[in-house]
Length: 443
Image (cartoon, rainbow, N blue to C red; front, top):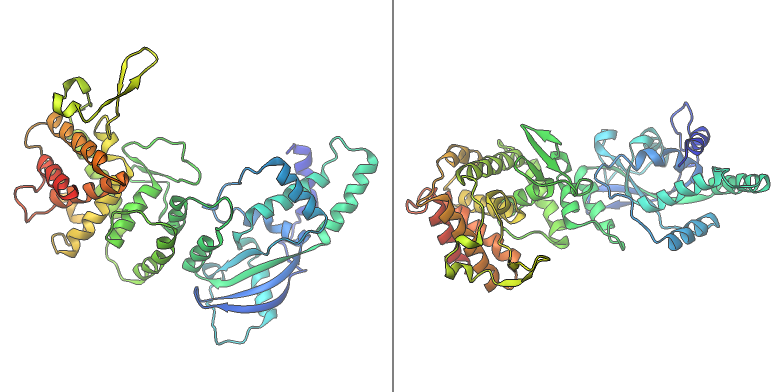
């Protein structure tokens, strides 16, 4: 958008007073028992909605990015909307943390009172469903305001079309005094369109309150906005960390699917209501970070080298072709060095499930206590032999598994169980023995 057009949009849509949503009219109400919140059905003029649209679409920083649409289809949708095509209701929410009130199912719904709540919190409304429809309306507004390439007659015609467009009514569903878990649940259930969020993005939404860009030297990368960034020691995917935490809470190393995710909200809500002395998210991340730093330090800069493998071990990495220089190319290992091995998502979920197992059996009391023993992790032989054996065992598992990723997660669960089981003297804190135990229990 050029500066000139932007200024015209601001001039028309921006006022010195906060938006009043004067055209807002509640038509009906119902109570959502699933999320314990009042839902009202309302209408509002497009003019009033666009007064707040640019602000409220930014209120949820984990909302999907704008979806790239087929230009022909997108143009058709804009034309349909301009010509008065009805669109599905846009779903908004008044967060309980903003209103400071809770819904009461038994109370008689006072439409005047609810209208006032919505108007008072207009700029804090959360957009749960309808982001793309909102973007289309904003684009239409920009198109009609723009004078670029138009004759005087077209400019005047578009002014009339804009006024007609502004006066048209759209439908809203507004959840009033909804709590955080209700917002999360509705965001996930409403996301059933043709361009759904990835499960990882959905998990990020579940744990949005835990997101801190950088803390104690650790940077978290969000799937929604920063998937291009490189994972390295001290810079981890937010979704990987919370999958590990999920595995700890759920007791399973396997990732959640969409149905599991919805059910999991109940567990997360229950967890938030308990008086937990340890911050599970932060403690899990701190223990993982300490472990990764220590294992990389102890690896003595080990690098995977096909030429140093025994003939038997080399057989697990068959030739897959030749490169552009006609050099032989073999199947790639799980990781070429210690960081590549232990920065993968399978390790996060394996660690989470292992900690859950150890805690449920009374072997560890808290996640935090592992910080005391991680510095004592050791090799029975040497880093080179230990890591070569680790990647060979992982390759054997890959060849024998139907679901490779799940088997790798299970391997790392058993690896950490063996590594941190202080009641098993033979394997406790010994890398090679933990690898062998995990391999035997996985295959």
